[in-house]
Amino acid sequence: MIDEILKSGTFPPAILLFGEEDFLVEHDAQRLFDAAARQDATGMNCDVLDAEQTSLDAVLSIARSFPMMSDRRVVWVRRADRLSGRESKGSDALTSYLANPSAATALIFTASISAADGIGKLRQRPDALKKKLSKVRYPLNRLITAATWIEYPRQSESSVRSWMNAHAARLGLTLPAEAPDLLMAKVGMGLREIAMELEKLRIYVGERGSATVEDVHSLAGSTREFNVFELQRAVGRRDAAAAMKILNAMLEADSQEIMILTMLVRHFMSLYALIDLRTVTDQAQIARQSGLQPFAISEAFQHLDALGPRRVESALHYLRQAERSLRSSADRRTTMEILITSIIGSDEPTPSRIFARA
Image 1 (cartoon, rainbow, N blue to C red):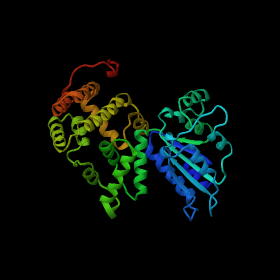
Image 2: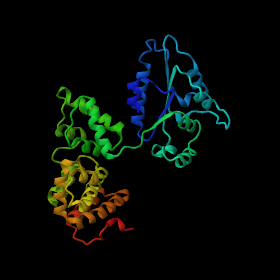
Image 3: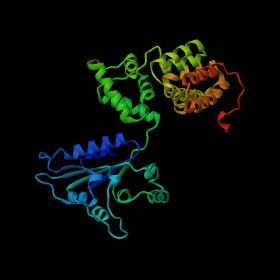
Image 4: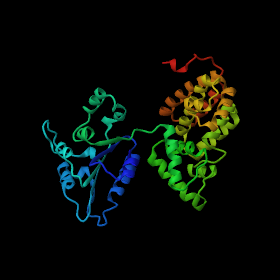
């Protein structure tokens, strides 16, 4: 929707951007603000307000004022979830303004509204939308009811990968295929943190523009030989010696137990999904259902063959045990060594679906 607004040049009189992915909220609000303010050569008609320090009445007073030496006034209210104002069953100030907004003002609100998380999926379900909206406090409930709004929910892993490659391209940076997983392993799936890593990577590679796997490893604090993907490969081959060498090298360099555990869980969840995808020939379907990138499917099937379905299922149980141990165990290295040994060496029969266990 933001791209459509920017392309048309017609701005809603009031728009609310909110959601769990605050980086995208801020990014798109900045795009709107910059585009709406572009025609104001004086800068006198552009206001960025902090709702914690500004009342709703003050915001609306500014929004109603005519622009000076310009055709448009732009008001961006940040942290709108902290706006103060009194709700009324009759005609409160915000409802009155939204019923007759200033045609010369573009009013932008950004907020974090945990009570409204997921509301974007309810647009076509009036009853569910009304119930969800009843938990949102004033004045945000009025904005969702009467203004244009866009929710930015937490991104899926595939969406983060796509965004990462697109954002890198905007920075003039070309990424190797392994980069998204390496960077997510380091900083998680938050777009703000990923954007910072991409900016550092762009500076690191300089005029070259194209990053190599070695560049990403250097940035992520690992090496091409000793990193979580090589650990996954060693475990997948059932190469205990190589797996222990990589594990200990990684733990010597940094305390990476949680990251290693997270990535192994992802890997074995994908292998688990492949058990039922053996006869599927459509690579796109396999990638979609397993969560694997197409280039990784062939190697993942090799790991499934080497480990066997029984060990893959057992591995999920061991990973859950290791997670509990890491929360309380002082000897974290021993916990990780036992985990790797158990996964590679396990021959125990397991139920057909490990998740049936309590």
